Length: 262
Image 1 (cartoon, rainbow, N blue to C red):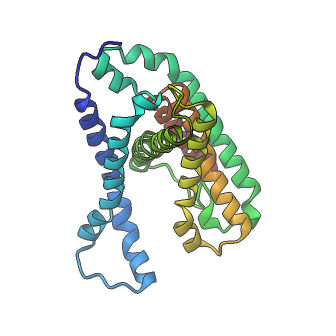
Image 2 (tube, one colour):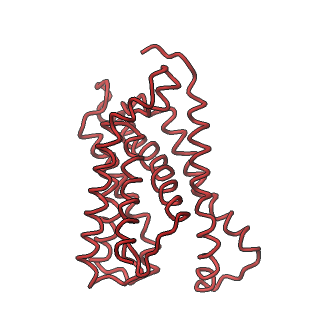
């Protein structure tokens, strides 16, 4: 396809949405940080709102890094975003979204059901604080918005658009330079690596809530990584927006289960 426009406005759009998604965490940080700092014995030397804002710098930097990687490498590696392709080639967005939203949402819902089901089987071995649905699950519109924005958009920009793209690109250039595109084996390595990385990223929070036993560690990796495998496949086969839709659908599934259990 002939390139018609520069895609920097897509970068700026995703940057705006990604930063907004990160800052949707601010009320939660303001609520949780005093307790966490007290447990660690760290004195509050700044207003808690300032500390909460500073705590969001790292995820904003991760968003920027993921966006830069995807911006320069995603298309070269064989991945796509409808929004980027609209900006690059003038291809339509809405008609393409209509073609993939049903399968994306369905796979996201199935992932949510599987995660909740596995977690329920593991309840006897896991502290209440670690359960996916929580012990006092309530419906909260702001919490839902945070889940959809941060989980559905920010994490996909970091993990699929960023990490998965980078891993696949590096593996492709190291081991398959003669290929015009990375093979499915390389892509699956990227899918699994990004999903595993997300699972391991929950180690600190999990270890703070419970003693890290083998079953709790395995649960942490599965519950946080399983969805990532689904979203990674969708990113590969359907596009970045498909992964975002599925991730949002998974969180909606958690909310529905929460309401039914409350």
